[in-house]
Length: 340
Image: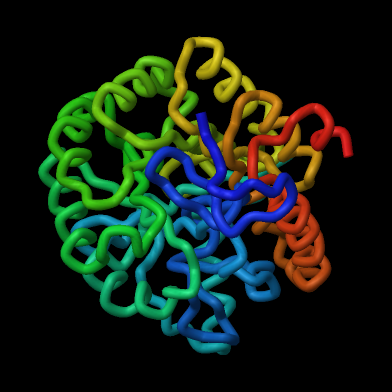
């Protein structure tokens, strides 16, 4: 099980999940903060406005959006040089890939990203103050091997927390179960960095976790978004360009808690990074109780309606409170610390 390198029950310079070293037990989920830094202060493309008021370097780690071998438009765009006058057009594009729904958000960006080489060249050097988890995605074992090799070549061992294998995204319309074992067998041993496997509640996550453990994966992320659909009730037109999307936010918190708990009940001992509907300290406590070692802030924290982003500084204060609270835990919280 996870043990801290520190002896203090309240303060820590880092926590260890096997061979993964984080600054603390609170990380950020993939995609919501783009590549960890924005090119434009006026239009922080790919980053939640809330994150601009939060010290990202103080998180346990910041997870990038999923990166592929080549740049990928997905269902959106890789362009990041939008001018302020183009804001209406950008918002219209967002409406085809990201929509608020009851208790959460639906998204179908489809792995829209600039590609691993551009990230390592243009973005990673500007986020060296952060602890980073680089999210990787591909459609074959060969692509994952290429991604791992590119990260190995550009990033010395120990300079990032881990790489995360995204083999569970619904928005790219691909059955990852057909390649998972090959990815684990071929890509995991090549990585100079610890590997995290991201699990979906819509796949056989218990079996996938057991496969990961046998392959030498260092930790699990539970969970990815839940495959979902919304239609215009007047026309029957799908809300999203991809028809189906990934549901995230408060609506999936009970599912995330269930998956984490079932993983532990099934005897899975790998460290678990839990994500799904986390917004408050109480949410973090629930996930710790369910069996998580680390908690991750996703859309429930970083996304809002467009008018709601006007309150981004106030929302950031809530994030800071959660960060302060979780940083107290150098070891896994027990009954006493959880009740405080």
